[in-house]
Image 1: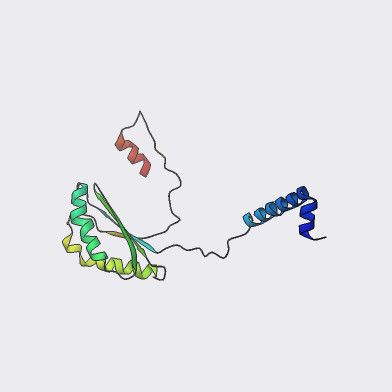
Image 2 (image 1 turned 30 degrees about the vertical axis):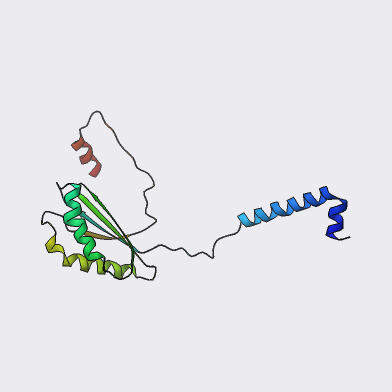
Length: 159
């Protein structure tokens, strides 16, 4: 007896058999491991600059644009993103996968040292950090108090 004969003579049995094969196949597919995919984290270098008392427009024109202009020529950059806020500038440089993160960070430091004379003297020294993709914050906690003022809260938090 062939499968076609079985399907014609007993269609309900053939349907149940097909559904069972489908369910077993789906369960097996869901339990497959994905070991074949490599754990890839892109090399990202971040540059942060604080400039106390400056608004976002001043930060953008006097710090962020100056740094972006100098950093844009580094070898292996795939994406550059920047943020300018009051008193703060942040530039993230994403490099190609074959680029060494330590070499990229050194290139960024070298380029920043070239433009230090063009930046405001009141601004803090740019901080270069290697950014890890897995260090996203898990939770933000806000604390509110009716008994302490803002300065007392900050003083207690750093102790």
